[in-house]
Length: 285
Ligand SMILES: [Zn+2]
Image 1 (cartoon, rainbow, N blue to C red):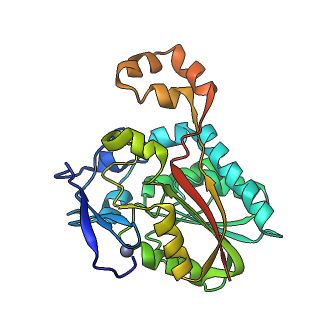
Image 2: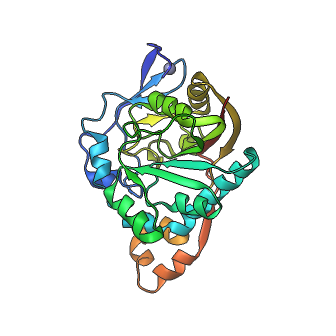
């Protein structure tokens, strides 16, 4: 990230192999991580050795119906981002959601008048977006898909950058395809958050699919080094249904999935002010 060689072993991991199930967005296998190294200069923490799998190949095969079930909760998160963008930018324009999953964000942005584009690895998710909202998403790897330069007013990387092996290149590309004055939105787990510290090894962002962990310092460093100006930092509040939370607790899973309670729990919205993700708005200057 910062070209420093000043690295230390940060945590030893327990993962020896991976399967596609563990790479779902809704995966419940919390507390699993690779051997992690930390840069003493910029605070970036990353898996080393690199996972012995081609991660993009795994994402292509992901099928995750549970993700779609949480449309309401996830939509709440995305609406709040759209509202913030309205405050930061004077007018709407073209909007790219990188890793658009089943198109929930794209659908909301489109309704608000954005001209939406998406790129997503999972074939299932791309088909789902088309089926549910009639939205076309390019299936492929953001690094490999070509986009015009100076084109987008907004590029969103929501829970993406912790999954990629080349965050520096990803941010560089985002900068290139944004128009001047346009904004990048980056949401990613905050390894230095209070929640992460309290939960220790059990933190839910320790999972096989997460291979890079940022703090405010390392994320700001990355964005500024590529020419971005940080406009706003927020702490992401997670919105879920009560069902999503209860079904994730081993002892309560059966109750959550009972025929009578499941629909009730699904209608009860919960906001978790965990503040353990960074939500950064950065402008191309
Ligand atoms: Zn560094």
